[in-house]
Length: 131
Image 1 (cartoon, rainbow, N blue to C red):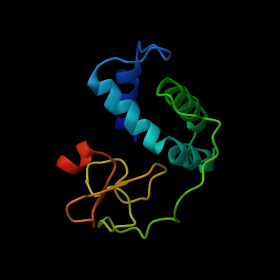
Image 2: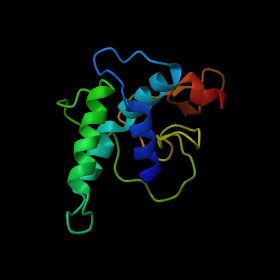
Image 3: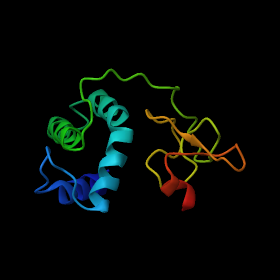
Image 4: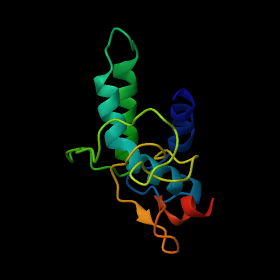
């Protein structure tokens, strides 16, 4: 998680939240954040302040990151499925099939795309499908 936040800080540093067109790397990062923002925000809020002393700082940063990435922070979050079984094998109802994707292993907040060829595998985007 720390690496993700470090990457986010580097990626978003100096980024104008109103005109955040930037490079394709910025666009990819913003898309990834929008896909997992609500679930991650819910998970961060569930942390106990005694076990996570920097919880409030991370929550503030996560909200700021969401705003810069164009997340509708006020939107209600309704998870599409319960907690995962703990296994890291992909199943059709378990998110993106690409192992490197942030949405692998858990059903994400956003809609997944079904492979048009086999009709069995689900991906977040064409980028996830081709990797």
